[in-house]
Length: 126
Image 1 (cartoon, rainbow, N blue to C red):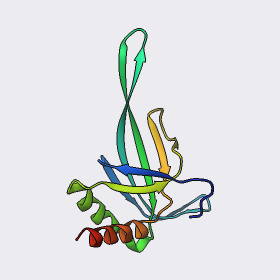
Image 2 (image 1 turned 180 degrees about the vertical axis):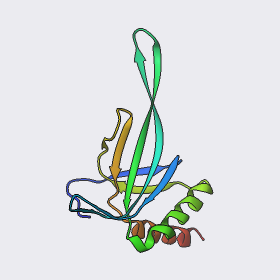
Image 3 (image 1 turned 60 degrees about the vertical axis):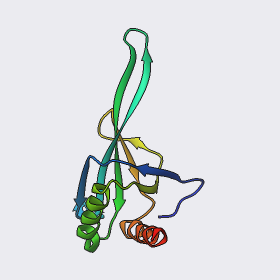
Image 4 (image 1 turned 45 degrees about the vertical axis):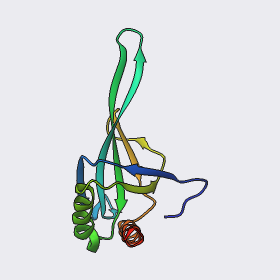
């Protein structure tokens, strides 16, 4: 995916759910396969009436993934994050999702690129 202007780098420390999505055609539009995963963060703000208030914000990351790599990336991501690793990806500015507490980020990297970067990182640490 081409970008212009800037990239935002996200470091994901915890994933709450992972969903591989096969490509589908709906209303004549082809939606490519991807892996979606969610993470959460807490926002703290001061409230005049209640004092300090926390709000949980969910972020859904969408990683483009060739259909033939869905299973491999899904398995790898679960294993990688299950070992307590962090995942760094570059993506879009978060946009509002399906609810007030959901943001969506589209990765500028494909699943294939993320796997290649992780393999390179592991080789360099060995």
